[in-house]
Amino acid sequence: MAEVLPAPEPEPAAEPLAASAEPAPFEEAPASGLAAYRAAVIDGGAAELFYEKASTMLLRAQLANVIRSEGPVLQAVLFRRVARAWSVARLTRRAEEHLARLVPHAPVVGGDGAAVYWPEGVSPAAWDGLRVPDADADSRRAIDDIPAEELGNAALYLLAQQDATSSEGLARAVCRLFGISRTTADAEDRIGRALLAEPAASRIAVEDGLVCSLRR
Image 1 (cartoon, rainbow, N blue to C red):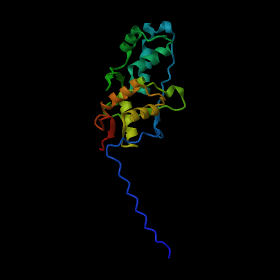
Image 2 (spheres, rainbow, N blue to C red; image 1 turned 135 degrees about the vertical axis):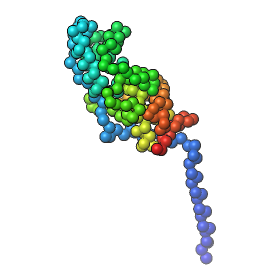
Image 3 (tube, helix red, strand yellow; image 1 turned 180 degrees about the horizontal axis):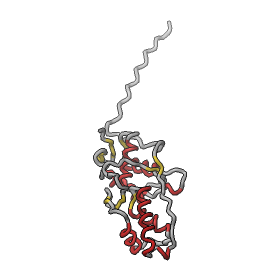
Image 4 (cartoon, one colour; image 1 turned 45 degrees about the vertical axis):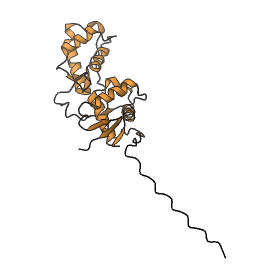
């Protein structure tokens, strides 16, 4: 008579993940459908004419053009863009003060304390824009050249793909979205401060190193 083997014991059910388990990092930063950043095209002038009274109207028009085309744009980016078009080798305090007198309207202090120039009719509180680089080299920006509001919008965009992640993972994903391959400590700090300012502050919760999206 054949020996009857005992029935195998059922495998224990897998335990659910602990609620405190850290969310998986972003696999990639999806950027399909996002607008590309476009640097304004400026017809420059001669460096020796930069401070001349005869150049005032042209400089005013160029400053307005950059704000209209690239706004919101950090003051440092705006002044650097125009100064370089005039072959001004270095953006000195004198050059900054000269351009500050000619800029069409006052800047708004951003969430990180930086001066930002906004196009007329655009409300910083309501702006949800996000511009990413494409194949054009001029569309790439350093992390310090991106307004805090735009960094916050990038975080909101990424958290729409995944509800929560680590602060470090989110910072890396934001940098990657803007074509920045290396996430430095300064970049992580700047992105972290952007999350504490609007528009991100009221829609993101940061606690114990985790960043979560607050459903509206």
